[in-house]
Length: 89
Image (tube, rainbow, N blue to C red; front, side, top):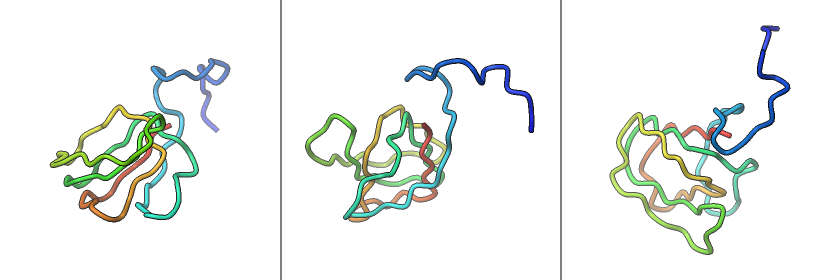
């Protein structure tokens, strides 16, 4: 196991992500982990719900390779055309 000199450091919203996980859009459930950011592998539209929002929003024409600095609790299937999404937390 590699040595991590920052292992004892506390996490914060501005600290680099410590977790990366694939996001599979779904219309019925929230993500199991709230993100700090979302990486978009293949661009398109993303329908999501931010952690503090009461309704979904659509981010249109997000470019491939973008990192969206947004705390997301759900990514929806309906309306999402972007692919290869990775949650960063």
